[in-house]
Image 1 (cartoon, rainbow, N blue to C red):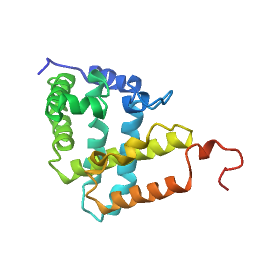
Image 2: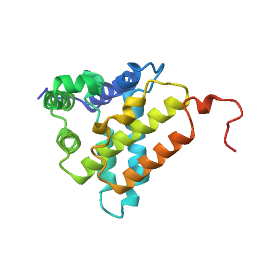
Image 3: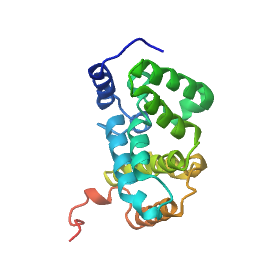
Image 4: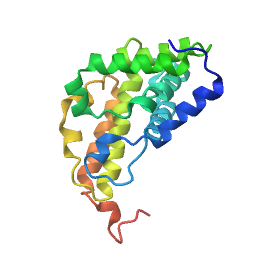
Length: 200
């Protein structure tokens, strides 16, 4: 583990996520796509909104904290999109991410909890970790939908890859996904950019 880090050190390094692009979008032609920080915010927001609807099945506060740290290692590694992750191997990727998390927090008193929260996501070792994994993918689908509405035609494989729905064990998440897919069928690619199609 790295030496002592001040809270300010951690904050400054974590803020680098604002400048790390989500590579899955970039390689499919999305210009000015979202950053990892924007994605993490959206995941935390969906967890906040959907979590209470799970009738006490999860600790929403803990799930929000997991959402906020789940991609924190990407401040150093960058966003490794799915095809690259497959080539590396999930275990290799997660081992590198753990090393980055330990390095980021050093001996700071918050390190133990932050790393434990990250592990719950990476290892699917808690219901909250599994829930955030599901929301991580649901958020990706919502963003893919929005990019398609802007006219991007290179995102079909996001919807067709079974790996992207493997964590949908929660009926509430699955229901939102199915609702989004139905909306996608109703509104063809580029729908939002067409004149006269603004919703009332």
